[in-house]
Image (cartoon, rainbow, N blue to C red):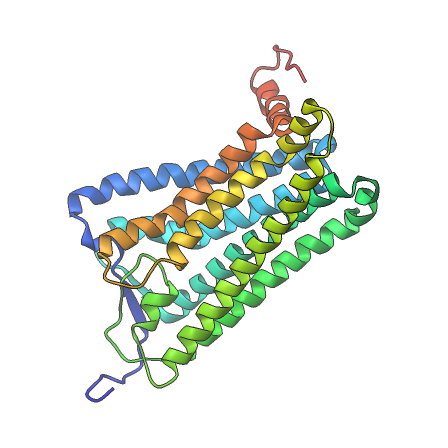
Length: 319
């Protein structure tokens, strides 16, 4: 880049919500803070309930517990910084902190996707291979799925972060986002390797997301084929009800992810891009525990038993 400032960049400025009028920022702060606290509370309640109720110590709920943990860690990696910057006069972030945030968001974000895939496999085995369920989804097998999901997320975070931060950042140092997101960071990099890194990172991320999505779709194709063979309508309804919450979360997760990562290239307003990004960063984690709590009867009853009985010990909670 002839004439570019090739001095090493030591910090970035997260432009974030600066495209919006300053009068709106306190309202955004309050809205996102309430959604963030609700996300933390919902996922922590699910985790505490699963661990506290022995009747929920099954592969499906242990995977749900791991999913809640990954969601909490993902939001902790991104949202507190976003909330602080909404009210801050200066939104600088040091280069190592930026790399750490990118690693954490990719690690926990992809661990979340891998865990959703593992939950789809669990539902496939439960409905299509019920006689082998306890063998295939033994405690060791369940722990292996969780471990592989976390390991896969760590690999994705390491690969993406290493690829991006081995580039040279020449300046300017303003990231057109509220977090250290890959596309706006690559716009600040210079050198011949930038197009190659951009293509490689995009290919790796899209391949992983589409691979998880296709595996989930394949699981549900077998599930639907098996359920349709059940003679009674009540039996079909019960079989589908065990998959409803997972399927809704999958649709929400991949729906918003596709909006962010597969949107067509072209001119976009900064304000529109920022609001679109918040749907995946803030809204999706907010909806997930609500969906699982409302759509899962066993979990809903366990939540009432565990917490409402402590708040109102004189009342008998019907199980």
